[in-house]
Image 1 (cartoon, rainbow, N blue to C red):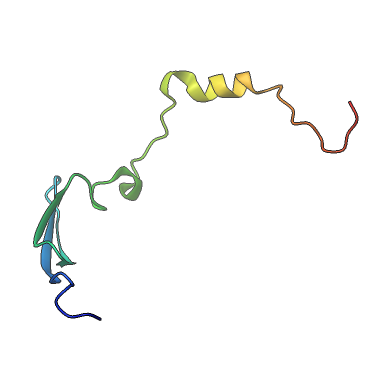
Image 2 (cartoon, one colour):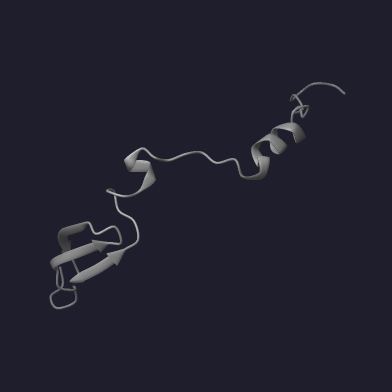
Length: 75
């Protein structure tokens, strides 16, 4: 590696909006994030699939009778 071109890799503190503090190493000494593994719905198991205004149902209704053409078939 070339000398004097790489940033310094130092101890870092990541602070989440929920109050969780993570200690790691980075080129920045301190960072703040909105969500972390301790409060993200996917990792906490509180995630819920929300069908906003029936968009999934509308899509399924619109394309329910849609059929792809078969290759090599005569019309």
